[in-house]
Each structure stands twice: as C-alpha cells, then as structure tokens.
Length: 442
Image 1 (tube, one colour):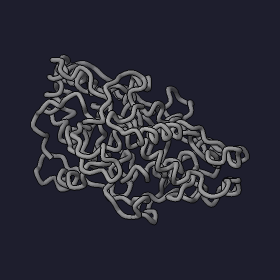
Image 2 (cartoon, rainbow, N blue to C red):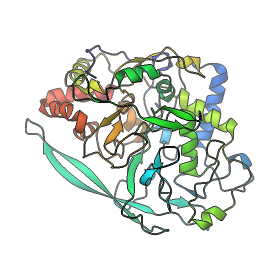
Image 3 (cartoon, one colour):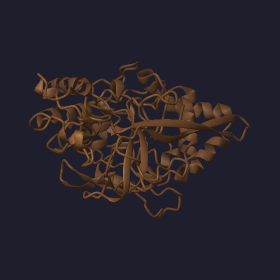
Image 4 (cartoon, rainbow, N blue to C red):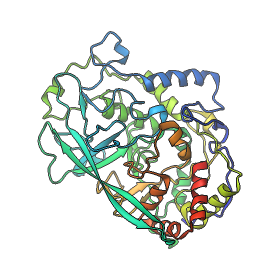
C-alpha cells in the first residue's frame, strides 16, 4: 500500500455529518445532518451513555444490574465527554479510563482470545458490596532517551505493569496482558459504513508491492450478526459492529447482561460474584442497546481548524511525503449504511485503513486477538486528534496512553512504520513543527 498522492483534504472530515465546533464538547454533538426522529433517539442514547448504573435490585429496574464486578459505572466514566482515556498520572493511582485485557494461550470458542480461568478477559478492579474486586494495577515508567538527527533530544516513557491485591491467586506465568485506554467515540458510524471491498483492496498481507507495509484484515466473530465479519473497531480491529462493541463493553466494563451477552462476567472460582443478586432478565434491554448504538453511530466528527494556513498545508504535504499516508489513508467514500442513510455515500477523511500492522517490539503487547498477532495494531483514525486536549485536558496517545504528546506517539512507531518514523526524525525543527501543526488541525 504505497502512500496516496498528495491532495489536501478539506475542513469537513465527516462529510455532511461534520460539526463545525471546538472546545470541551467537540466530541459530543450529533451528526449535522441527523433527522428529527433520530435526534430524539440520539439524546436518549446520550442519557444512557452518561447514566450511572446501580446495583440490582433497585427501584429503577431499567437501570440496575451493575456488576457484580466491573471497571466503571457508566460509559462516560471511561469516555469522558465522548473522548479519550488516559493512564494514571502517578504510580499507585487507580485506573479511571483504561483497563487491562487478560488471556492465556489458546482460543475461545468464538476464535478470539482465551479468557483467564480465574479472572476472565479483563481485570475488574471494582465490585459491589460483599463481592471481592479482582485486583489492582500499578504502572511504572522508564525514560528512554533519544534524539532527532539535528541533535535535539527527546525522551519516551516506557510503561511496565504490575498487579497487587489479586483476589483469586497469581495470574500465572502464561498470562498475556494488554493495557487499553478508552478511545474517543466520534465518527464510528462512518467507519462502520466503509465498504468491505475498500478494506480488502487496501490489504496487502504479503507486501506484494514491496513498500514495507503489509496491512491485514482481522476476521472476527460478530455476536450481533452471529457470523465471522471484518473487524474494524477496537485497538486490534477485533470488533466488527458497533452493536457488538456496545454490548460487549456493557458486559465487560459494567457487568451488564444483554441478549448478545446474557451471562454475568463471573468466572467459576468467583463464588461470591456468581451468588450475587442480579435482578430478573437481561439488564441492558434490546431497546436500550439499539438507542445506545445509534448514539455511537451518529456522534459527529468535528471540523478541522486552520486547514488553509501555510504551516498546516506544508505539514500535510510532509505527512504524505514521508509515508504516513501509507497506513493513515486520508479519504474514503462510505457505502450504504444498513440503518442510517445519513452516513451513506459520504466523502470522509478519517486517516486510517482500519487494518492491522506490525508496529514493532516497542509497542507489542504479545497478546494475539483473533487473527491479530502480539505485535499488530489497527491504524488509529486521526480525526479529532488535535482536540483531545480541549475535550479531555490531556495529550496521551497510543493504545496504552504511553505517549505524552502527538510527537511522542510518532516516535514510538516501529515495525512497518519505522521508515516513516525515521524520516520524521530526519526533519529539521521547523518541518517537524509543520507536520505537528497539520496533525493538530485534524
């Protein structure tokens, strides 16, 4: 997949859905072209997204069923203002908007990672009364010095993960862990509407064009469709549809059952968890799940800022010239969305190919996920990246938030992206500032 020829993109990355806004609520607005009926559903979905779920049984039965073990009490607990999570600020602080995936060697019955026998597929660090939480996570960082070719120094923070207060014994030597911060949830319906054929056309698993980039599709089980589909969501493209994503997150992060995931997240050794009251029936109804899904599908992408300024345009040209566009594909035209016509036939600029790429040992988690290897990650969409600080008051990037700035995120790139990273290191300071000005305009 050679980089696309340089063509400046406009200031409406979400096509007709784009909202021209900035500031702390930039990720929380509905698609600009949403109709009146879906707008009502959007606002109800927004209420569900921000609702603090409570322990069952409760007087509000439609919003009870939290736990018995969980990570947060609401969707917005991790995706604050529909934005991006971050790691703890200092050693010993609790994880507020990130979690740790767990698995052991082998595959689950759906072909995905095999859950840990005692702790499941993620560590739940919270629990309802009389049920033990699974444990705590501690993050240490080590500074790794480096320098640009012009001699300017920089430093990268490499994280390491430790566990304490494990309620059901050691994790074991064969455990595989993967830290994940919550991503921003803008533009997801548009990504859902990208044609499978377009993704297949971009895939080059054997690097047939010898450009050093070999993007791969992740084929995953979709619980909503009950079939194997092309993955496009999640840090490893390990989820195919937003309905599956929402239901899985409700189950894993908040302990809410649904018709898609009707079983409580309680491994067999967790007897108190399995004995806890849960109410009757599933806790996240089909009606609520559909509204929550529409909300996620119709969150707007914010318009670019300063797109026609000289430094931004120069940075955009550099982005293409050094090869970043080989994976961060600027432009797609969406196909027909099965549920929402407003997302169909839109010219969008997400700067992603939604494919898996080997990012090198520095970013590897060593944890396979369906067909993704332990060194592969999905190309992250870049739209909205320049507004993360305004929305979430931080600039932490990459799958585990280790990068403390956009520039550090670039400098962590390895594997298939190493050549582009090295070209960035070779730029002089004014050129680096131009490229960063472009990224901050997205």
